[in-house]
Length: 165
Image 1 (cartoon, rainbow, N blue to C red):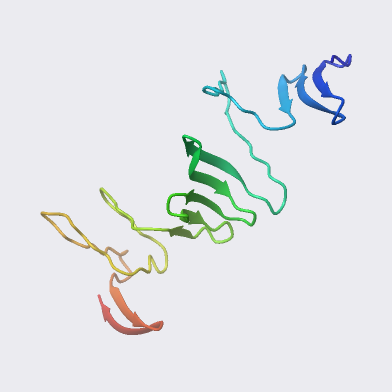
Image 2: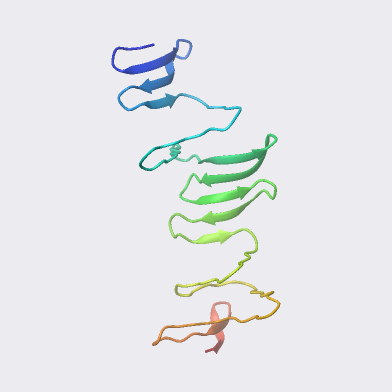
């Protein structure tokens, strides 16, 4: 239905609303419902940025779910609160979560690094076990600035018991 104002719409009288709209001045296409495609969905721009915006209502998640043969495998999500994450349906657990209030990152499993790992902050990190499986060199390098110390603290119940520096 063309309404005389550079807007083309397909209107559903049963639901009393437009289900498909093209705004002529901006070429903005609006769908009121789900979009299902049997092939690849391609987006192209010739200049500027290309952004996909997911704007979910307050208290609800927004994200992408990746499936294989109809079975949920992974979800990239913005949680109802402030967190962002990657969810693994196979393990029924979050693989990675970023707290929107603190920027703290939580991994749901082991971290394997192929190459250098740089940690910074104060304290730089707190963890359980650090294991190096390099066949030729197993060095842990602690490097500090010219006026500070590098070291390892051994704590029990938040109380420092030993310090190597």
